Image 1 (tube, rainbow over the protein chains, first blue to last red):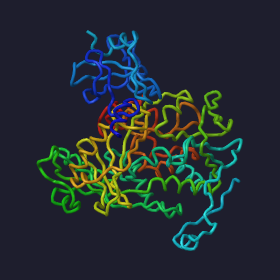
Image 2: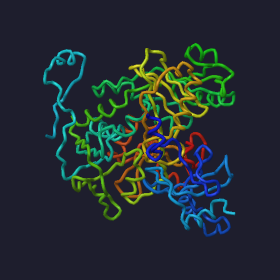
Image 3: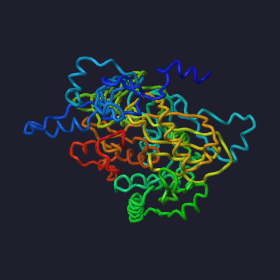
Image 4: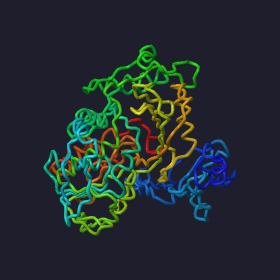
Length: 112
Length: 422
């Protein structure tokens, strides 16, 4: 009986994250490596304009919100691409990718 | 009611008052908030309450309030696996935890509260010759700084922990271990209650169900906090909120180099005494001890991604169980009884953030990840010193918030800025 309840309410209990890969569809978390927050890093090609503070912000400081966070995952046992997702850190629910997400993922992720 | 009646617990008082007397008063009566305090501590966990205890007992400062959003010790203080140890390589992290280990020894009698500190020994297992070499480096570093540490080869390990599985046919065979005999376990919720009792008896106001909703900041200086019971003025504020560090610091406009991750722990059904030492499996993570009630208590690594959910994924449970059975095959015959999670605030270098902030009179004790419990008394003592003395204590200087911008990271494992790997 307990098993049936667990299976019927997948949103209420995390058997494992189900990550929406834009290339492969929803896949178990065990296929992925976590890549951290989706952060815009300073552009190395224009290094004279990049300050220590820019790097400090990109490498260290995190919103760490209790709510929606934007992050990247590497689909190691799947398409072997970096993907970008938006996930709620309190409920573990993934949001549908938006147009803005795609623009963001073209910066940090494989987008070809 | 501001002052509570002082209660002295002892075996004798237990005998004398166990038959229906009216001896057992509420040791944490709800105080009436004063309009202004010298020091407000946000967070009534072990660290915040320890700070309040040392402020009153060592530094004579009792115009102090501890504001707790939930109940005392309801966060990570009572969610950890109760292990204490100081087997760290880098000076800064070792010194803090070793000071704590020295304090644990006499804390129960200092507080008049039985903390059940059991220095039963803590054993770290190595799974390759290279890892054992690394342990020897760490053990030597510990001995040089005056702590005791011993390296055990397979033969000695089998003698020290007869139940351990040293089969070479396992996925990650065990080749030896580092043992710190002074390491062990402490009854974790008693730590919160003991510190709180001592602080309340000294005149500190400990308030539960009192979340801080914003900070009063004027010209870059904190002057009070806003709570569900109104605005309370103060000279200084210490944020000591473990897994809520980012959220509370955000109320003061601060962005921290921290991410919050879920860490899980479990207990088995109770059985007769079978294990008299704490054992940590290092291929992955799994730390095991047996409580005095007989339950086996198991903990593992983080779930691997930021989360405030306080409930874990089943894959992490499986990871921990698989490792525990590899060390102690007899555990496979036991059923898990309870399972819970805590939110660990892990900084980019994996080490705590202690000291001042860019906002004057606002201080931070955060970033303990899942290693905060063992440091509790040392943190309390040093934070109390920080809040009352002109000069910040030397031991916490390396843990400043500004170290990240300056590049002076304290990364014990050399992991890099990946919180979920620390």
